[in-house]
Image (cartoon, rainbow, N blue to C red; front, side, top):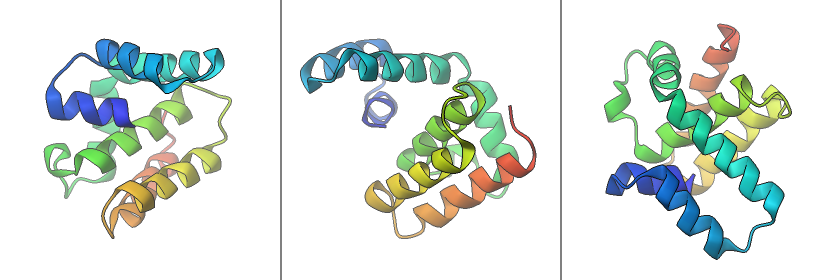
Length: 124
């Protein structure tokens, strides 16, 4: 999430942020590979993922959704639609927990609602 957040705030390329941050984190190869795959999927499908979010939260223009919430949802959508290893409920629960930790008081409810709507509409 930090990589996506930094990219939104600074405008730097996600590839350069990923390279810099993963090198300094001391992550294992498997974690680094997963993060790179996740970032790559989100980058390649950003318009498609954001369309899912727009449909699930039509009252909230994507530009008005907080950077934290937007990127947490992007991660979950990518995990659900691209990486079949993460069960849908697990991806949603992880996203909700990230919202509780990093978002506002209402983030977890918003994230849960958007992802629940997306899953209900058979995303992916």
